[in-house]
Image 1: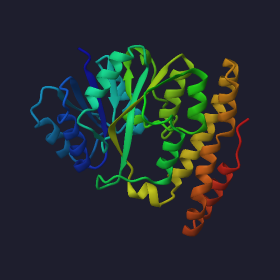
Image 2 (image 1 turned 30 degrees about the vertical axis):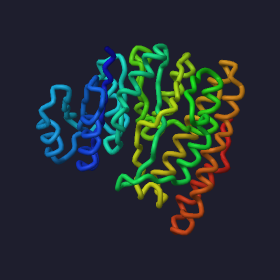
Image 3 (image 1 turned 45 degrees about the vertical axis):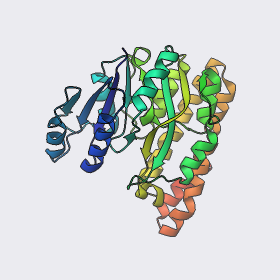
Length: 297
C-alpha cells in the first residue's frame, strides 16, 4: 500500500501550523505519515503541541539552527521515506480527501514524477480569494474538468509562459527525484528550478480534475510591494537566463524562447509598479521597471 509522506517545514504562525496539522489528521485515507520539521522556531510550544498529539504516524523534528527556507526544504527531502511525498506549507490546508486523491492518482499514473490536484486559494482567515496572481495562474493552467498528463517541451513551455503550479500541493514520486535537491543559492524560485530540472530530465506532471488543496495567500503579500518582491524577480531573471541555453541545447526552442521572454513574470512586475510608485519607494519602483523591461539572452 502506497503511503504518502506529508512533510511540513515550519517557521511561522503556530496557530496556522495547528490548522495544517489537523487537516492531515482529518484525512479520510489513513495511509499517510506526517513529519513536521521545525526550523529553529524560537518558541518550543509548537513542538510540544505536535508531540502531544499521540499519533504514531506523526513525527516532530527540530533543526539545531535555522537553515533558511531552501535549507529546510532540503531537510524535508532528506527525511522523506515513502515512495511518494508532499512538502506542504505550514499554513496550507489539505482537503479531507487529499491523500485518497493522491494515492488513486499515483496508482493510475505510476510513472508520473509529480501529481497536482486543483487548488483553492484562501486568505488569512481561511476564506476563498482570487487575487490577480491566482486568476492569472488559473488562466494559464490547462483546462479544468479533466485530468492532464504533461511532459517534455510542451510542459516546459507552458510553465515558462507562466508558472501555474502550486508547489506545496504537489505529490512527488521519490524514486524520480532521488539525488536532486533545492539550490542553496536561491531563496524564492528554487521550487521552479527543481521542477524544471525534473522536466528536462524526462519527468512528467499529472494535473488532476479534482480539487483537494487550499493554498494560503496572506493579505500582506497581496496588498503590498516590498524588497522581497524585487528579490524574487531578480532570482527569476537569473533562473530564466540559465534555463534558456539549456533548453536550446535540448532542441526545445519554444521553451527557450518562453524563458528568454518570461513575459508573465515581466507583466507581473509591471502590474506591481503603480502600487510601488504610490508607496513612494523609488528603489523598488526602479527595480520593478528594470525587470519589466528585461529580456534574457
